[in-house]
Image 1 (cartoon, rainbow, N blue to C red):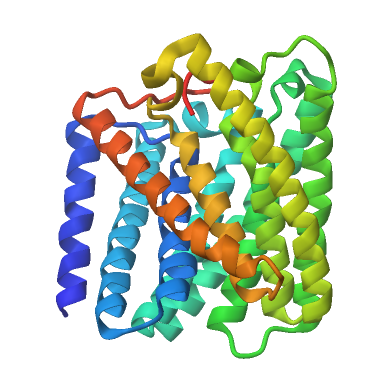
Image 2: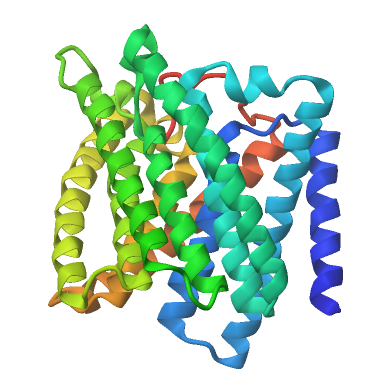
Length: 356
C-alpha cells in the first residue's frame, strides 16, 4: 500500500509539472524511463545485490520510474486530445522513430512491475499491449525507412533509427521475464528481426556519414551511441532467451565491445571539439533529451557484460558502475535545472544538436 500511495503522489506531481509548465513531451522523452529503468534493474541491483536496504532503494527508484512513465503517457494522451499528436510525433520521419522509446520504456516498466512488485498478471497484460504498440511502431518505421530513401530526410539519419532494434529486443526481454515459457520460434523471430532492422538502420546512418563535409562537433548526434546499445540489448536478448550458448554470447559480446570502443573514441573526439567551439557550459553541460540515450547504452553494455564472463569483466563492471552513476547524476541535475529555467526544448524535428 505504501508503494502504491508513493506511486500516486509521484505521478500526480509529475503530471502537475507537465501541465503547469505547459511542457509538450519530446517524442523520445521515454528514453529517460529506459535509462532510469536499466540503471536500476540492470546496473544497481545486479552489481550491489539484493540486500534489504538496496532492495528498498530499488523499489523506490522503480516507483519513480513508473511514475515518470505514466506521466509521459498522460502527456502523449493530451497531444491526442488536443489534436497535436501528428505534428509533434509523426510528421517528421526521423522524429517518428523516437516512438521506439515508448515500446522500450514500457518493456522496462513491465519488467520492474514483475520483478520488484510481483505483478504477474498485470505485467503479462502490459506485455501483450506493448506487443501491439510494437507492431504499430514497426509498421510506421518501415514507412519511415521508405521516406528516408526517397527524400532528403535520409541525409539527417542518426542513431534514433536504431530504436527499431532496441524496441524489438526489449520485447524479448519482457516476454522472457513475465511469461514462464516463451516459444523458441517467437524469440528467434523477434531477435533476427531486430538484427535485420539494425542492418537497415546502420546502412542509412553510415551512408549519411560516408560523405565528406560533415563536422564531428555539430553533425555527430548523441543518439549514435545506440550503435553499441542496440547490439548490447540484442546480445542480452539472445542470452536470456536461450537462443545462443554462453560461448556464442561471449563472441557476440566481443563484437559489441569493439563497436563500443570505436563509437566512444568518436564521442571523445567530439567532446574535445565541442569544448573548443562552444566552451564547457554550452558544449557539454546543456540539457538535451537525447543525452539519456548515452546513459541507456552505457547501462545496457554494463548489464550485458554482467552476464558474460570475460577476462575484462571485473574491470568493466568495477569502473563502469561509477561512470554510469556520475553520468546519471549529471543528467538529473541538467534535467532539473532545465525545468527550473524553463529551457526544456521541444524540437519537432531532430535537428543538429548544440548539446550533448
